Image 1 (cartoon, protein in one colour):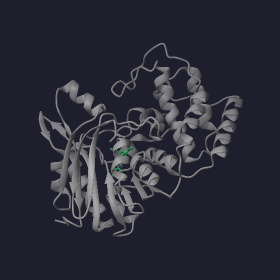
Image 2 (cartoon, protein in one colour):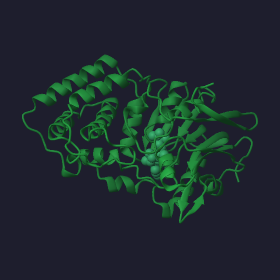
Image 3 (spheres, rainbow, N blue to C red):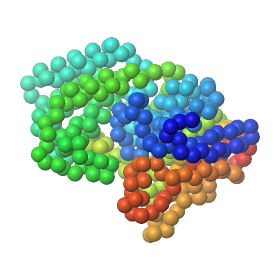
Image 4 (tube, rainbow, N blue to C red):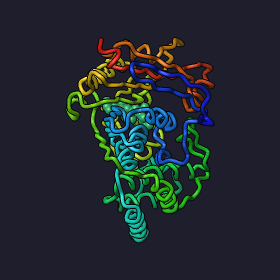
Length: 366
Ligand SMILES: C[S@@+](CC[C@H](N)C(=O)[O-])C[C@H]1O[C@@H](n2cnc3c(N)ncnc32)[C@H](O)[C@@H]1O
């Protein structure tokens, strides 16, 4: 029994049985998942617990893989994992966590880059949108590394982007929480960005396993049938874009994208994150996913509720209505201590999270 387990419930389809638990905390500090603070990142403890019960060697798809929490945990347990996400930054992080690498070579490359960055006589200044969060010295160091990072592997890029987030928080005296990201806390502290980067790389590199191979596609899941063969997926496991329409290019990612010069609005345009069109867009995604699963596939979605004009809409109701699959099993649980949980405390609402399981071998299609 896990010490963080508070309750468990199980789904029992024929002949499969999966137990779901609720964890008191969502993070595993001794893992690679802290490499980047992505908004909407799912609990790695939850993912690890579910994946440990899935048949090793199965082909698993996460069609909204974000920074690859599920994909990494699947790789760790020997599943053949494929991740798809239309946010390019999320895909870099997911690749960085799962691609094989040579430890010594990677750390040496980082040291060379830092030496090269220090030696630059001049560099471009950071744009105003991002600069306001950093001490001048830290901002200059970030821009120097950026200029020297063109050969970075996905792991080094993921470390670089995660270090930018960490440095933004440190420059603001570590006062940022998930609800106060972006609030400027003067005086801004001087933070040595090179040390942040070195420490972060050393902290995470030993968690890279790189095998079995994983594929991450930067692609729109509404057209997933264009990149995956028909009936090729045994298990779909995902936390789809949230029903309360989070901005996956916001928060820390906005700062990173501003520094990289990424056109955020064009990234956002490719994501399902407008409440008004959520149902229709998600319908398209589910029907596209249906083309790549087969008659025995197992499909697991972790979804949540949304408050609309003081009325609670259950995520599982919406997904049960629009999915092409029949007889869902629904397991409802409290949000663990996350930004969503905090939001509920502030707004005195009690939204819940649901796990929806469709076992096509037992339930079939509608
Ligand atoms: C809840 S997040 C997944 C987070 C992920 N489980 C993790 O731990 O990092 C949902 C993801 O769906 C992605 N997304 C939204 N619309 C998409 C689309 N049309 N095609 C592919 N991915 C999309 C977002 O970019 C976001 O990363």
